[in-house]
Length: 173
Image (cartoon, rainbow, N blue to C red; front, side, top):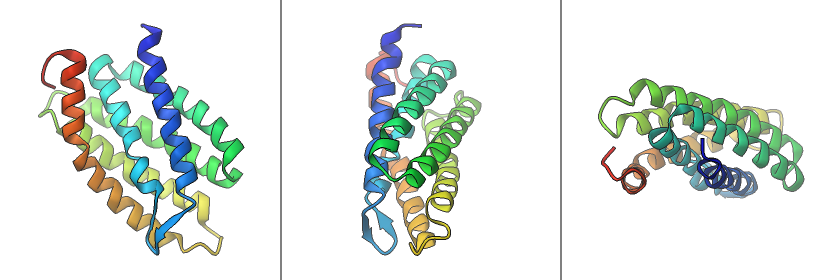
């Protein structure tokens, strides 16, 4: 496996986690934080890696992104946010890889879409319950708003997924 295949996606993943951990602290309104818009891009990175190089690379990128993202987040975000993010991130990324692999032979859009949808549900449930349960933050409306944006982003990121996979492989997914 070429180290270059891992470095750029892992750095992108770590940056997405860090930015999302910072942005989740800033509500846009009563049911949404800014982190809802950046985090779904992590599934795009995982799905492109999975389609282009397979599940082994996708899982490695997720683990490296997790380690780097968690370390940076622990330095820049509250510990509870960093721990919740790390737990939700790795569980949802590994689920995304598994669902993607199960559907990879079907229509080009099914694997990335259903992988992202299932991972988004798990990520939202884990992150918001660990990060905000027992605090005065009204986290249930935030979790529902966050999930709604993630599901919309799963749909909106399908065209970039297709274009990037085509450019990286020279063929349609």
